[in-house]
Amino acid sequence: METLASTRRALHGVAELVLAGPQHLVGDTVRLRVVPGGFATTVSEDVRLDGTTVQRGGVRVQVDGATPRALAESLGLTARRLDDVYPDGTDVGLDESLQVDEAAAATLIAAWSAGDEALRRLEPGQVPVLWPEHFDVAISVDEVNYGVSPGDADTPTPYAYVGPWTVPPHDDFWDRPFGAARLISDLPDVDSVLAFFDEGRRRAR
Picture 1: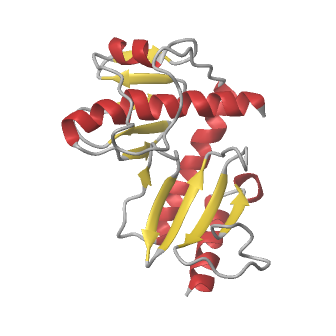
Picture 2 (picture 1 turned 45 degrees about the horizontal axis):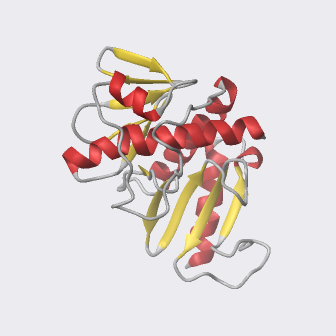
């Protein structure tokens, strides 16, 4: 569990400080996207996390043991915090040494990938966004948020969630203060994640 947490923290730092921060300066958006093997920017030149490396053009750099500042500089970018955009981002420092485990990274990437595909099937007209603030891939439909989180302080492993803007009374489905959540480990494939989203949509109506 500690390895997953440290890897999630490191990748969160990459997403915000190395990808979204520099992107916001040139494209005025923090939105990222899930791609095969990781996540990437959405505007300007493609910058992405691929497994345990970051890459831009022909440059590829290992994340493990590097700092966000050094990673960005290796890619020809300037690492940047997003405190001026939102208040609740990562507290990873620009000069913090990042610790990434390959297996833990694969677990997180698989969760985002399953979430991205399920969300596209749930609502084909929307493009899921990987938000660097809370690090979840999500969409909103008819005042209901659907997404997959890589885990957090309350739930340390990846989970899917349904969060109506007006939360229904607690019952056997609505089991969280924000709505409902299910561990990705209990949803073994994309169909299972989609079924959870569909059930949440039905109950939220």
